[in-house]
Length: 166
Image (tube, one colour):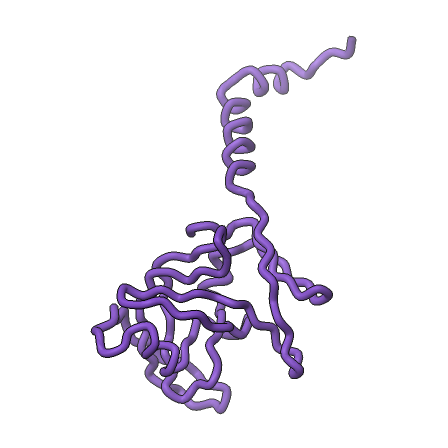
């Protein structure tokens, strides 16, 4: 029988071993892989279907996957479907550099829920509302909650190991 290093034997018997085992168990319990189907437009852009929920209504939309966007962004039309005439939960203003180089003051609102699948729900997420936008966007503030994530193109899938109810 091979002799075990005394330091290694101590570590495996002591509180550090318990910490290592506990960390492995907790990490394993949280990792549930979620695969989200994406659709690819003729332009090559990828979209993820979502259900948005505010305090007042639900609406479905297709979100353009945009790793260059800092926030989930909604068109004025989508935002109005969620809120109608009701007062929404305004969060704050940010200043954003647009693709054309202009800097604009953009309102952020707190959205109760962004549901990408039954087991992939992002709660209390800030969304930017762009009056002149023509597409809803899935930005980095949502994607960062889903990390680590991977994308594949054939078939078009977005896969996350940390997605449910975050």
